Length: 442
Ligand SMILES: Cc1ncc(C[n+]2csc(CCOP(=O)(O)OP(=O)(O)O)c2C)c(N)n1
Image (cartoon, rainbow, N blue to C red):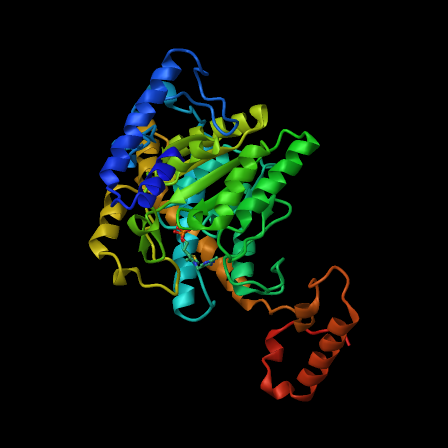
């Protein structure tokens, strides 16, 4: 204030304003004020209600380039060797094998559904290649009662909780067994029984909703928390800010789980943000924060387990940023070779995948070998193929369902449209693929 009025004042004196003079003057003034402060005549520490801090007496900006990146927590190296024995979560053999089974089954399902889209058998698909460790590691650390809000690339969380291959494929086919009645695009899964809130396409909208759900859980006083997954691209949405700030100020038991896989479709992280990833934002909102190696299923497990404890015991939000790499294309509508080198993806595929790391670990324990690998590959592929054939053969839902659940009770004008559609399709049946749908009631 003082500096600005001093500059304005010099304009009235008809003298050219020399910015440096102004700047020097400002520094001079502030030194003078500081001298008074240090003499103890005024307060010794700032008492502004908006921050907790202390005074400094030299002008300096905080330069983000001066701060070191937040470290990446890992438990095992790329060869599946535990680095620090005290950090080994000591999971039993059955749990580790389930982790491996789920990660690889997801991988097999992805390959087959991806191919099925290429052949036009389903309309759309998104693979989870390279990110299986983030799904399984985090899901395994939660209670099945914890609520999940996902983005769309977290199918492994559902798999861990028991979503069946039939349920995945019925949704992708939008057939009569799909709980969503074929209304959404493929991969928009949801399951009330498994506490997995149905996915929707609009990025980051689930984030403030998840904070709200966590607030509701807190009010109910249950030992439950919410986990909300999102990509580093989605974190640029305004909704992400709203979610973080609400969760922190309202003290909500929520884990914000960011999958930082390097890309948001074709946008690399260097065009997405200029700070130190997403984790560096966490403490700015007043959240516990940590960055984890997302290709390390044990590190992800430990991080999520500790975050859950904080949520439930302290009722505070936690931000986890899991560093990983999106090995596949963004979706079946994308060809990633248009914006990144094939060599780059191949490097990650060869050097560091969560599946390979866990396999190394299991082999070193004597829990897995080549024969088991071959048998499981064969068995899991067969399971996926059989389910695929079943789902494909099922009829599409009754077209009447297009009009249901717009509201809880169908208003008269929607009922009228439903009748009109039935009449129209009956009159022009030869122009509609009516036989591939379940029949409506007359
Ligand atoms: C509000 C909104 N804007 C844009 C899109 C289009 N879109 C779909 S996915 C995506 C990229 C998201 O990237 P990221 O959050 O990093 O997740 P990833 O796909 O890498 O898992 C975009 C821009 C959308 N669905 N919603």
